[in-house]
Length: 505
Image (cartoon, rainbow, N blue to C red):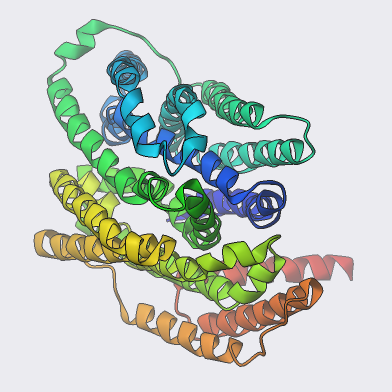
């Protein structure tokens, strides 16, 4: 777990620094300078382009991660492998672009009544889709080389700072809404360029297009795997991004989606550690599957699940226990307070996902990767049906409830499948201890009186409540030695602090 810990810490530090920027963007800049409809518009453009990118890339990033180890020792084959990965998405883009032009009247018909603001930006989605495809492919290349910190820097610092600049520029009337959306697309193009430059600097991005590669025995296996993963990627993004499509087409349109977006982004903070750990764990799981090392897989499974639960529960407490004060800090907070229970439901769904460990990554690396596709197809259908039922009843809260329902069902199915096929499971008595500690911390924090609506009173309340949560939760996790990795990191920090203090004396 050494390299996992090092790269995950670096990535998490960068990511959480980016979270500070992102939180400022979400909780203050966006509500201050953008109407809820404009927030919904910009998030719709990003979410739907991500969904389209899953179609266009034809599974190339996942093929890269799964088959990289088979080519890295043969320089000639390695170059041909990268050449194949580079051009594969272009085939998907050609087919997609044709369909995209043909379906413009359908798009207009669906959104003309409830979300007419979307219609002028239909063709902005196509270049943004292209940029997302190569951002994901280049990030996969970095992950193959166990390097995730710099891509996180580009994703979390550059893109969020650029977004802040755009919001301020629009709020001060330096740019129009059309220019805002155009420059948003440009920012992702620049991110793709920076990732390419970084990939070149690793001196492993040596691309050679050679059609003789198609005759390799493993090529058919790669294509077959890529098709399944492509369909699975579509399913995953449909589960998580279909809310943009469905909420924007219902009563309230992109305005309702704008409220949902603010609440969703508050809640989604808790899954950042999971993303960081998963990025670096997946190549190690793939190698363990290649060596058929079930003991290593079980170790990664339980350690990842436990540490994700500990961090996720801590962040969940920090968000939910402070949620009323958080909305007091948001400009036009009464408009967005309607998303309070969206925060709760989305945060719970991400906590469930973290607590059950790298289920998808384990299945992804095994010979049973097709199960993930079957499960995703079923869950997409469940999500669509659940949204159709609950969105008319509860609005954006209904979409969040559907999300929680799907995440619980999907993770339960993956847990059962992994246990049945491999005898592996992520839970331990330490996970129960972490949950009990989280429960005790919650009841201690809610004993603190809620603030009024005053901005500074709310800031003080957040500071006090957060200090109580961090102190109580951290001390109990450490004293009861719930996680070896957490205690090791804490003790290493204590040693460094003692050295610093000793040096000053």
